Image: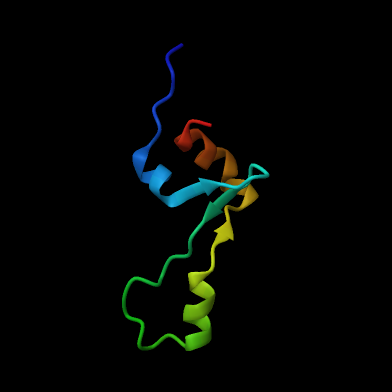
Length: 64
């Protein structure tokens, strides 16, 4: 069985934490920022973890 290639798009969007969880950034901060509140924009800047339901799919894309 050959090695799995990493999906480069996924590699640019996800990082593995020290404990092995998957870190992601929030969407909706690219444009149309005038109608979004400062609190909402500030919270979107923070990173978040991939949900447990999606974790196996993301790991497969990363070749982990």
